[in-house]
View 1 (cartoon, rainbow, N blue to C red):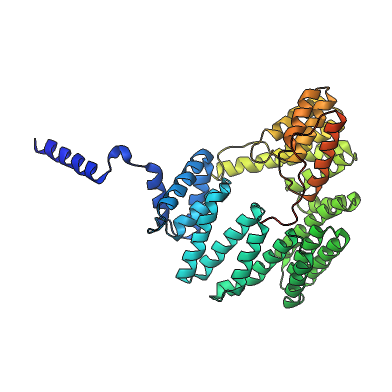
View 2 (view 1 turned 180 degrees about the vertical axis):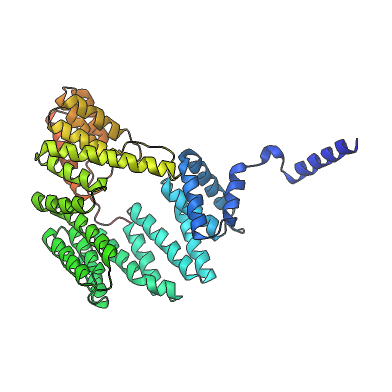
Length: 427
């Protein structure tokens, strides 16, 4: 009898307080526990674990947004580390409207704590978010505020790299004179250095001055070679990265032979790297060169990538092994070029089916071309229309979008989506 009375009393108290077991929210409990995660590696591991289940991650992010909204005018339920995990998780799941207030809260909290490392982390997260959402004006504002802020050593040490992001934000707004002035100041301050010459090359590429951009990266390559502070493997890694950027510039500048030469050098130095083999295979086949060798290289890239994924799964870093959308697209495209349309279609459909990496204008354009080659006009038209819904990722996409519009009009079809143009200033 006593136990029964106690239970009833507890239930009565719960009702009085407006809570009960039925009202428990496991998502909120899990979110609040994030406040207790400490240490960079622990935060990183927790974030990785949460990101594995994307459906649940989205639910957690939605619940966190509700908690933050309810807390307006009251004490925030999240401490810095909890907010950092939610912000990154929201960023990862592309719930940008939720990520933004959490990053802002991180900035505010880190500033109150006067923690240099946290201030850097919070500002960098917010800047990256604005870049990913093409809010370059807001990104520039955050950069400028950061540079004007006096703080601990970590803050001061990070300022050159935030100025780099400011230059890039200005370039994205097509304020190229301002952007280049910033890069010149960074180069001057880093006398004899190589890194910020690449930033200048990046801005020049954005401006469409490809020859000048190539020169900037070549100068940077020379500076890397001359830098006595860079030793062996580190120097080679920076050189490889620079050469890889040059391959893209050479392709943009219609210098396919030079791009191929750089990739051949990279493959020789890094025979187990699938990216270099895929890129060389794709560049050749896209320009109707060395189709048999292209297919061989791309298939090698696919095998290497699958082996790497299998190892990552074994190590617990990923849950599933899946086809790489870019590599499947490359294989489909070389098979298309070799007029093996049915085989090509299977690979291109595989690439387009990847919801994370396959929603790309170029992949869907390739798929539509393949449908047309197989005389499946209705599917081709629907695929081109779908392609026009995707955002431009690179400058090459601008001309590709125009080409898709022309293909649709050639078939007597009006594009359902207005061709997108690159915004001069997106705030």
